[in-house]
Length: 227
DNA sequence: GCGACAG
DNA sequence: ATCTTGTCGC
Image (cartoon, rainbow, N blue to C red; front, side, top):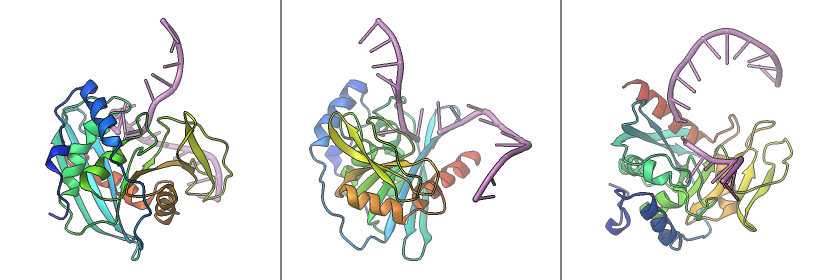
């Protein structure tokens, strides 16, 4: 087991009110720092659910930026024990995601989550949560906005605009491909915003979503259809 | 009170 | 997220 979890930090059998309190508490432990370079191994994370809403299926794809290839991939399922509540996504998905991360044989340089990190009502989206609990650098790359507003972007790949919420910079709206909808990038843990943006850009080009997250999503879909 | 609301 | 085929366009 390459990644181990601090025991005190994971309590999933809680209700929404307690979950919010936990987020407020843990948010203060997030570290913003420059990403150690060079970044080569990016672990893309995603989760899906069985149609009966009983299981959460999570996947991790370890993407090698150097070789442009997936070097590891794992799937884990956990029973769903929390409803979908905007802002509390990690209490629904993180148990399965952490189980999948636990299967990695190689330690990733950074985790890439399908959802927000700092761009969250309490500045503690799923990317922060998973990063903090694993102790690994992490970032959030979401397909839509949870909180915040932004200006118009140019159409070229690489164009960006600050994502602002309550007068605070919470992330970056980033175009990963010419003429396609942008993604919403924010820090998770042990990273800074420029570093997060750079990783997302280096992981994308052919598609809107960066390769690690995109492949993790495909892996989840296949795993679910095989059920 | 009303609208918004990651996946 | 999930329910779902073809189709327009680079």
